[in-house]
Length: 106
Image (cartoon, rainbow, N blue to C red):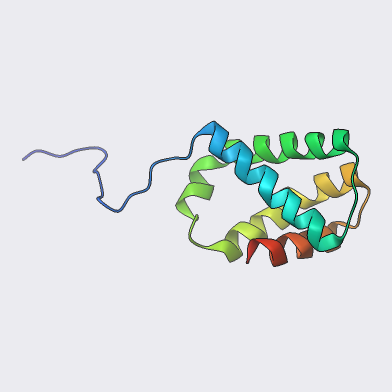
């Protein structure tokens, strides 16, 4: 009997690249700002993108496993990320989380 510790599923998606994650984080925050009709200084945009990227990388396997469930991902953003970014951008965390959810589709 030959058992593999990890089996290859023909429908399994590969993990995204660091560049892909960085671009996705940037786009998601851009769409969130647009939903809020919010102007943010470039330095604060970069700071928020770096923070969001680090949090995504830190939870990459879980995020990848739940990649098809946008509601769960939007919930994760609200619980784990929105408060920190709201503090950087000096906005209400609840409004930020709702704008993210609207833009993200969760």
